[in-house]
Image (cartoon, rainbow, N blue to C red; front, side):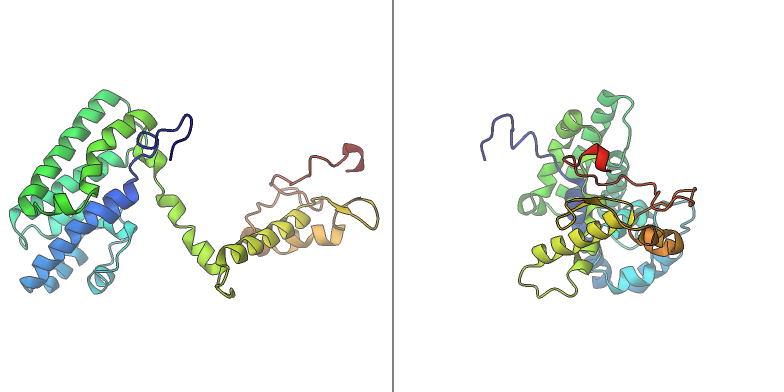
Amino acid sequence: MASTGVNIHLDTPTEILHTILLGIVKYFWGQTIFLIEKAKLLEIFHSHLDSIEREALNAPSLNADYICNYKGSLIGKHFKSLAQVMPFVIYDLVPQSVVDGWTIIGELVVFLWHTQIDNLEVYLAKLSRTIEDFLNITATCAPSILISKPKFHFLVHLPAYIRRFGPTIVFSTEHYESFNHVFRLSCIHSSQHGPSQDSCRRFARLNLVKHILTGGYWYEKELKKWVHASSYVLNFLNKHPTQAKLLGIKLDDDKSKPGMYNVCLMFIPSMPLRNR
């Protein structure tokens, strides 16, 4: 764990997806649903959630039917949406301390999903105060969870990491988590004995196809020279824009020149310029 220039404690910031959305928000969600089901108020909760006006909210994942039916299998996008509206949905269904907890969670989520901080000191002071308020509310609702779940303690270190690295959205892995779907699709026809190798080979083949279709060169051993695909191959994407979109290629406006696309071609550095 020791490496020159790396401090494992200072250089591994708290990640907001797993610490906030899949951490404290998920814990409060589980406790809240337990109280609602115990009081047999789930249908009322469903009605409240379904009646929320979504147009003014950045909450695309507020499908009341899905959330209530799969309340134990929600993911980050659902918790991000719920954090914005829960106080208005459960105000008359659970104890006031739980409502206060969700109110503080809403404030905390707003603070942490900042993309720009104008006044760092003022921001960190407000964030620290919000974290303290949340921990106090948590101690009132479920004091044992502060000991059993370390993610509550991780919140205390967030201001230090923000001071060191900037807004938490900068070091969030939320966007990259969505690529798990891409990797799963690449393993559909895999034997599952070496899924990582299967995925790498599949992506390598896709890159080869993209390289050839966009006018890339490769060294032909039999001809002993650098070659590229013919104009018929290079015109393929112009005639099949759907395939170009699947490869992430934006077609150039000037389609008169085959192989001219808005991409960075993967030329090999050792290739002589005069042979291109």
